[in-house]
Image (tube, rainbow, N blue to C red; front, side, top):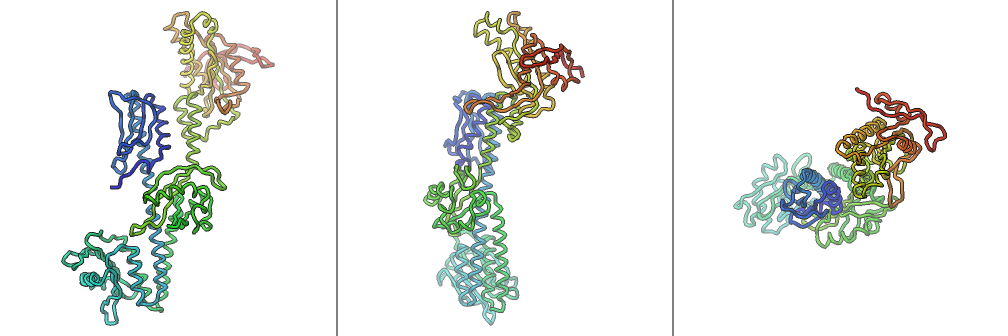
Length: 616
């Protein structure tokens, strides 16, 4: 079985990206992917080996191991490690299966397309030869070109109905022995007129030990004219059904050519049938999503399908027959070294990824696979180039990285996953929309900080801010920022939340309840309380900052008003604007505190105090 190397199926960059994403969930772990022979393909992380040993998962392809996924370090003992490793194994298995499918589909289509092209050309050549004495020699020459054979003969019925040898290849002695061995089988074939594959016993095949025989009748619609017979020696492989079909098609062309001019219409019909088959294969070939290009031994473009035209922005009619270096701007010069490698080493290059600039398209990311084209004698006749356009995929991956990098610090993990499922929903450039803003500030912290050591001070503050952050994230809020001893949160962005105001209310109440529970375990001197403000209104949300450092935040009067309300709130008090109360009035208990003149507003604002949730 052919040894499959991971590096020929998966790019190092793609493997590294997947390992890095998984590593974010497994601190203290080193992840690596190895070839089946132990060679390292990619590795990330710096986990040190432990006494428990590494976790490993084999990477299988059709049940055969092709590589190994390894996790080592202290983090492998965590419960999540095995789960993450199993998920990675599934991802790599699917990628490997897809790579093999794409590789096989392109190769099979190319081989089939080449055979149909060859058969079509042969048919035209034979059909153009109307001399019955020349056709048998031409038939054998063309048959041996598309089907490997050690010996071959053409027998035609003469006027007396006797089969007479008209042409042969393989040498006189071998041809005679071959004819004697197969003649007993032809009587039945004259009656049924069907091709056959025979296996001869050693004593039947003569001195030359011909073992496998393939013959097809030279048959018109009305009668059998003779046979074309091919043979292989014992050490060769036996003929296949596919070769039988090829020979039958070739024999049909030869029979029409042997027939006189009055049957020439049949020649045209069979030629048209092959032409239709060729067009059918052309359509299949053109429908492949990957760009497919072939070159001959002189590096001239011989095939270029529609997908290649679309990806490379070139016209097939203008590129056919031209050197690929000039005919494929943006790609040809970039793969010249790879083409030379395939020629010199007679091996495929799979999964080579490159970035280029294409006319009329601009920057693109392409993945190319190059393989030598072989004929039936295993002679290289050119190069097959398969091109996959990864530009959109890389763009989506960049969107995912941007979304993950922007929101992982601000929102709950489940919100990040929702954003990653559809990155296009996130508009980071700034959008005006309705949001609910929650500000909460630790009351009395300034006075408290004057009497406490810095280390102790930070510990107390972090305990309180942690409770606030957990309450906000539990309601899928966006944790905007910590401002000293205060915290700011946004609801209804980046994901739409129809009940955003109620989520902010629940977060604030949870915050106060958790603080009260914390106070039960703290001395009186360390008990601090939050004052909170909640406002619903329009704001501009998006990434704000410089290209070096940006934050996802909200800007607008509603943000300022929420900040002013929390400043006005007493310890343990939650104040709301009328706009926020209007959205949650059916769910909460609140009381009016009257009109308050807040900084930055020319008119007083009606302020309400949130007392709790209504009992359902």
